[in-house]
Amino acid sequence: MRTINKITILFTLFVAVFQVGAQEIIPEKEPVKKEPVQQGRKRIDGIIATVGDYNILDSDIDKSFLEMASQGVSIKDFTRCQMLGKLMEEKLFAHQATQDSVVVKDEEIKEKMNGQMEYMVEQLRSMEAVVKYFHKKDEDDLRSELYDVLKTQKLASEMQNKIVDGIQITPEETKNFFKKIPEADKPTIGTELEIAQIVITPKVTQVEKDAVINKLKEIKQEVLNGASFTTKAVLYTQDPGSRSSGGFYKINKKTPFVKEFKDVAFSLQESEISEPFETEFGFHIIYLEKIKGLDLELRHILMIPKVTDEALKEAKEKAQLIKKRIEDKEITFAEAARTMSDEKETRQNGGQLINPKTQDTHFELTKMDAEMYSEVSGLKDGQISNVILTDDPRAGKKYKILTVTNRIDEHVADFSKDYTKIRELALKEKQINAIAKWTEEKIKETYIKINGEYQKCDFLYNWLKK
Image 1 (cartoon, rainbow, N blue to C red):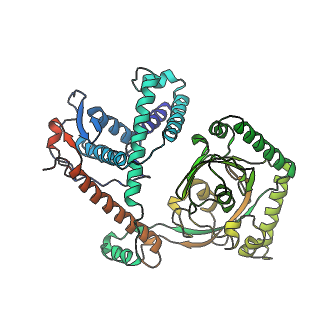
Image 2: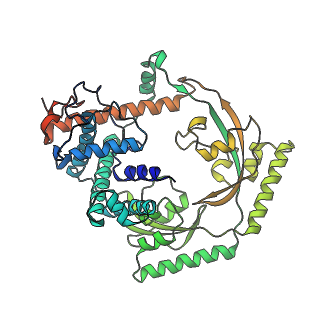
């Protein structure tokens, strides 16, 4: 990776003001013609605004511009007034989160901070270089500021989630949303594919299973003797989604985890550690930390048994044989999936994949992940892919064959054909409106002060309470 790429990534990690995936940001009005603080003018850093318990410095705006630029976002027509408006929104969410006693676990923030610090050190080769790069006096100073940034962002994100939690959209609302879009502004839906797959999983020997079970039992005993489960999870778990947080998850009975995992989790008492148990991902042990109403706060360790070279060879040969039988018209792809695929989630539907982002069977070609795109983009309808070896960090090595069952060409959105996507857009608009209404109300009852020439800004919201 080139040095310039490392630097922009570091800024993204350190001052991630815009959390596009986690929150919707209401756009500001058109930039005001007269900018109160000119870009080329030398400024003295100081407090330019206060929102509740939070202060905003002039340098915070500079950091935010750097973060936008590092993500490739044009800042040419984006004013300091608009940036201040975004920062005040974030602080308002975070301030209200503390007022509403929204809980953010210090341990979770520290785990995320440690992960980011480790990455920055890896990129710049030493902690001293990272400290110098961010103009901090020492590592503690850097960690303190990064911790505050991450905690504020987490509080703001949790508050926004709380605001939109429970908001639903009805079919009638979806229909009215679509009707009000002018014909010329109807969204275009890119080319979409419907894809099916057959998965063959190499068989794991009992010897390898026993080795993993015994290791998990050993870890459990060490924890019972006083060792930290969190530390053991960081060291041993093969679940990439929870390794950095020490195996932590917060779940309830609606959380989309596999049944075997939830059955064990909900059978435990607080501070109890389960015996090793098996799911399709491997073997686990669970430590139940707390029961909070309908929610469980737990940690787990996942270990995946090793697959022998012989087992891999057998699985590949089986997949190749299935492919040949389909191509020879002995059996259809759907029939082969129902009778021979090892993936139970898709087996009953003839191998048909569900898009996890939209929960329907359509995959938009331009938004498909790079790996799947490379596997199916060149396939014609009904054509079968080569046998592909995948190595999922959580599920291990598997062989699969893919086919395109349907291709929908690019088209202007149609209410009946694209209902799911239109419904998501309608829901997003409703959530944005709810956040905007909440923001307007909270501004009225929150202490807000804007200093100096920033009082001349033309904000979207009534921050000046005129």
